[in-house]
Image (cartoon, rainbow, N blue to C red; front, top):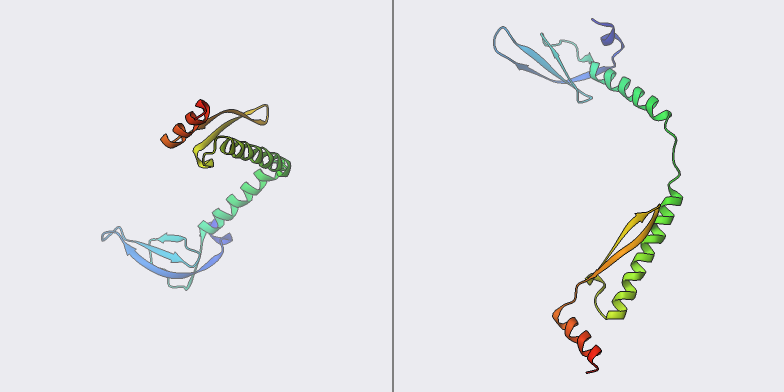
Amino acid sequence: MTTEHRKAPRRDVVEISREGAWGRVKYKHLLSCGHTEVRPRAATSPKLACAWCLRAEAKNEEIKALGAGIQQIDTSDINRKLATEEIDISRTKAIIATRFQIPIEAIDVVATDVNGNLVIQHALLFLSAADVARLSRNQSGG
């Protein structure tokens, strides 16, 4: 038994399946943790050491150590600013919809980030045939 197996947590054997042709048989032991241990013989004990749990625990420790050096950024101000800018864009859409008397769904406002601020680049309006006729009648005075 390796040092790794001695440190590994012991788990209940849920199921043992036999795989392979004669002379090359391997026994897969499904453990209560969900991992599978492959051995040349079927285990007679109700518990086996799970090397996969040990490996996973070691990797989790590595990940935690890597994450410890990362500085946490307070995103509340960024989220607040973004929400305010999104509200401004929605208001602009509402003003355009009211001005042209068209549904708000017919308006697409395109904004891009300029130096950390959302700036409206352009707006696209979808006008139905009825909207076009109505707007052209209003312009011609009819």
